[in-house]
Image 1 (cartoon, rainbow, N blue to C red):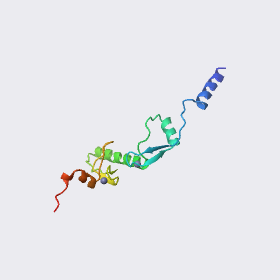
Image 2: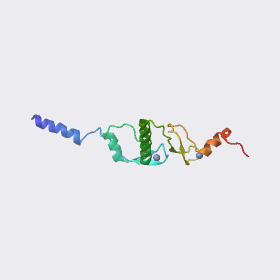
Image 3: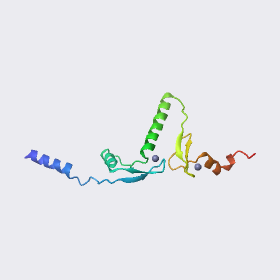
Length: 128
Ligand SMILES: [Zn+2]
Ligand SMILES: [Zn+2]
């Protein structure tokens, strides 16, 4: 009797869970390279299973690059070495790839050298 009741309620939980959302592929704009990437339903299921609330912000190459940067920074800090970091970002003005010696904070525009000088003409060396 009690065994029957147990397996019945167990079946209800595993086979017909109304709280399980349906996942469809989503397009997300990567905050690093600004290109769209697909967040697949399988990955969403993975996030759901892991109880991760926030969708990914970066495409896979950028996420990996970011992890490598963080790992390199952490390793350097552990060793007490002040490492020169070089972060590849897309210029907020012309969109070209440029490297900056700091990790840009989210939402703050980063410019390539020529655009930066264009916006800060006082830093330009005087013409000869
Ligand atoms: Zn990206
Ligand atoms: Zn630029």
